[in-house]
Length: 325
Image 1 (tube, one colour):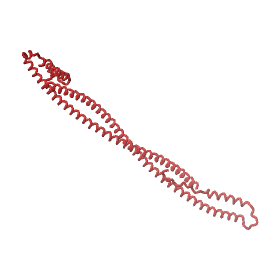
Image 2 (cartoon, helix red, strand yellow):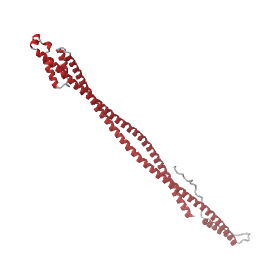
Image 3 (tube, rainbow, N blue to C red):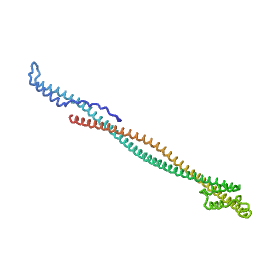
């Protein structure tokens, strides 16, 4: 029991009523009067008077003794009622405090649970955001690699074609280099048409001597067009180098932006998870404290009920004995 329980001492024993005892003795005395009195000078009347005086004195003594015993019994009743009433009141106060503590714990547990659920929803949402951002970044990176490869192949083909044309290689070598450029999908259609026209022109080394004599302007025209193609290819190279630079820069910017977002989401998730773990432990401890208080409250209620039962029984006993006295 969580309460101090007063010693349940038995009540003082009370004798039966003095009047009843005296009545019984008086009847015995009257019976004695019927007996003959032999060899004595005491008359029967004197005998009865003496007997009655003795009975009176004894009755007074027993009455006083019974009064003392009843006084002790009455004191015992008062003590028991006072002690038990105090214990019951103390028990009630303890029960009320425990009930308030249980209610406070229940409110705290509810708040912790709401916060934990809120954080867990945030964590789940951030995980989805991280996956979505990662998927988008992967697709962007894949597109970048493909486009960067195209630019790299295009620039390599342009470098090769420019070098071949500037070296004034054979028509076959020039045609191979220019056809490679012409087949690149990044090259504009207008440039492809110019390359097609150039490729259809006969080279100087392919012209017979008599044609060179009569068609020198055509030979010079071929050389002129070759220089124009080189200029066009160099302009394309500059254009594609600029575009590739911009592409690389955009990729770096996109990658840095993704890393910033991913890091922010990771930090948010780690901080939230740390708080979830902390509040989960706190909720578990509060739940245990609440359970302990509920156990104490149940025991206190049981003790109070037992004390109340004892007080009721004692009060009934004291009332009955007081009425008999």
